[in-house]
Length: 441
Image (cartoon, rainbow, N blue to C red; front, top):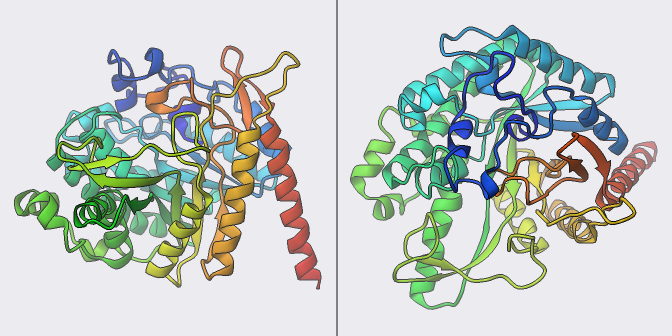
């Protein structure tokens, strides 16, 4: 879970404003004008969240620390925030659950955006300082860290499509934001290893599975453009220490030079302890004169057939397997952690009070099976985090689209297990029994 999506209390406890606070107030930015001001009330009382973790029997749980809650513009640590996160982390430890803590899950402090946001190396420096403080104050309760979550979305939807905070629409700024985030990751990786030695550190990139609509040269070229922007622009610097060969032709020499100013690309590939992979999308792309994709020029994505999510995303387990094998090919010696994978649906509670999300049960069956197939074919997948534990604020989709295993009653903050939660608990129990049997054998 990410802080802005579940915590609420955006004006309490010394927290300063984030770009999502600002963006969500913009008319039309989110569904029905929803904001994260109340969210799931987890800051007020994390007990329901911890109870849900215990109910599932999880071994590990992913959460994020809110940057604008943890440190202020003067760099001073907010002691109330430290106390809150230590309470949550200690609660997880008491349950025997290993926390995976993400440091940047899109909630950039607004004061940093006012100074250039992710287009400025100053933001990277501030992030490294934040990572250092978090490790110093929380590191005794945290063994596993994610530095940056989904730099593609933060860069290209935050600075080009305008669909996410801060809502800018400038391709050169988006390209710069992509590389500054990766530079920030590299700096935070060094800082975490110094401040919290022995911890495992990685990043989390969202990777899509793409296929060309035909073997026509123009469709193959459209596919290559989409793959560059959505995947290779992050895979190659972070895993191979290089900029994709076709990046200059697509973005232009000037914007690429500006994007790389002050950044050592080879340093971006400093080895991490794991590669975090978020996967949601499979798309078939074709060339389009005008282009309908919000971030890739000259590309249209075809409507996907059933089954699909509530907002039209393909449910295609084979795509997940291909993504995992692709990462394994790029980094064969690196463990893969699936840091996000899930499906958004228009869930509802029936007259009997139950949420029977049979589509999510089918999704889990298919995607866990695809992961098992990838492992059998050589992918070193060591962890799987389903997105998400509970329904929460889903960014531009507001509270309408639901991803959770637990149904959130937003008026009260109460959580109730859906059919998929019971199914996932059974999956966990079976996997644990198989592992025990294998060790015993």
